[in-house]
Image (cartoon, rainbow, N blue to C red; front, top):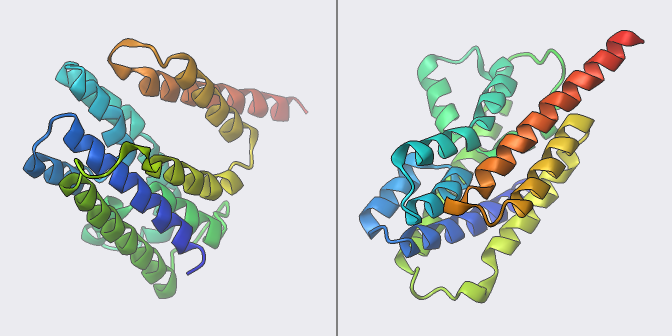
Amino acid sequence: MRSVVPALIATGAWALVTGVATVRIGLDVGPALAMSAFVYAGSAQLASLPLMAAGAPVWLILLTATIVNMRFVIFSAGLHPYFRHLSLTRRLILGYLTSDLGYLLVIRRWGGGAHPGPADTRQVWFFLGLAVANWLTWQSMSVVGILLADRIPTNWGMDFIGVLALITLVAPSLTDSPSLVGVLVASIVAVLAHDLPMKLSVLVGVLAGVAAAIVTEMVRERRGAAR
């Protein structure tokens, strides 16, 4: 339970901020609720909303959301050894429920070994319980943000609380040079690119971070092969 509470705090804070932002850019309550339920990806929503508000073309909005969500391909690859024995239907359900924080907690708890075996019943239920709790927290707090968008003061700093909780969870997982370099480069580039038109700083930062992580990994592998 101790490992879950910080995750739910971060999820709730991000969901509230995302719900408020969704309405304040001009979406009606109905589409905002549908976006929360069907997209269920806070970072993609927050990256797409400024583009929508700026009147960016649909292809650019979809491209941004796709690139931001590419990390879920990595998540799926990391979780596949644990859940490959489950039916396709169950894996699709778990895939929909997978989140950044849920993935980090599962990998941290199970070790993320080089050759992990299929999860036992206890581990499957741990992941499912965490995923459902995370989903319920996201949807409920997102609804609160959507319905009370005009009543929630912008100076509450809920997004800052979410950032702090997210950093607390992510920091222990940054254990190798590619991930550290990727996060550092993405953060710096996103800040430097803040004034780009149509709020493209997030997209540019993500692309730069991914590229930096790939290059760092290639350099590390070459150095290892040369020894």
